[in-house]
Image (cartoon, rainbow, N blue to C red; front, side, top):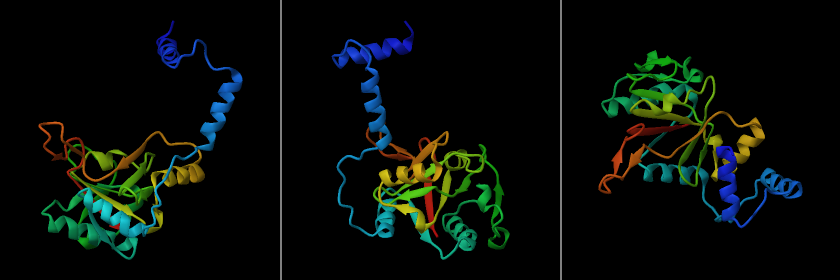
Length: 214
């Protein structure tokens, strides 16, 4: 017996079944999964942008807002300078052509490597309910740029803020169809309280998450 069949057999036993699902039962199950039914939802009758900002700040993220993408380099420079951080970093290719030099920032459009301290990314969408960024992996949306640097700066178009995680998944299915290799959810700086219940930031990812709303 393969390990897979052994595991599935133990699950069936725990569920009180002595055989695999019939073809009809399997079809019904697949049909239900295709429908993506939602469980009970709260009312969530709040302004998307206000709620998103509040939740981000409660998670120790910082938030800035600019009128257009062209203002992103100046906003990044302002944040880095105010926090005494290096004015160098890496970014997703979609931001590589911005006028970083005019803002006094050296930015390379490539995936992050070990020595890089600042990573600038976009986001697929943002979730107002939880203050979460939804990032998709891809050839030009390198996951390491949000994971390796100590400081993650995310550019979030206000038009891409959705109400809930369910709406984020619906948007992905509608626009992309098939899932990418990786979908990452970022809710503030990485953290843990495993050691003596003491909260530590930056334990397995960025120490800082700064969000620039556009």
